[in-house]
Length: 79
Image 1 (cartoon, rainbow, N blue to C red):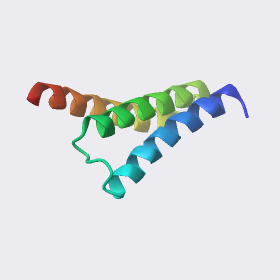
Image 2 (image 1 turned 30 degrees about the vertical axis):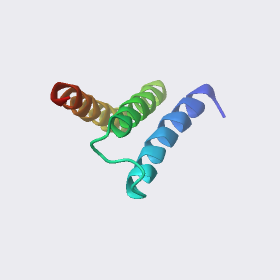
Image 3 (image 1 turned 90 degrees about the horizontal axis):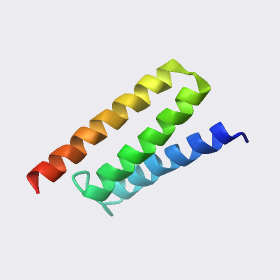
Image 4 (image 1 turned 180 degrees about the horizontal axis):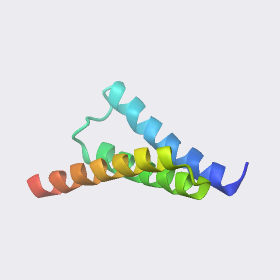
């Protein structure tokens, strides 16, 4: 596997861990850890997509990162 593959694998793994923890009620979607895992995972996956120069996933992961950043912003604004 290339470095780009590893970067993408790490990002997607972080996203899937957050998703699994939420589905199993270990963390709530409003929790700081869930928002942070989504932000970091999507950002890393976006980086891998940029390195691969694959626009559809760049857009997907960039939007996911932005939405997660918005969630983090709201979390800190409300607490």
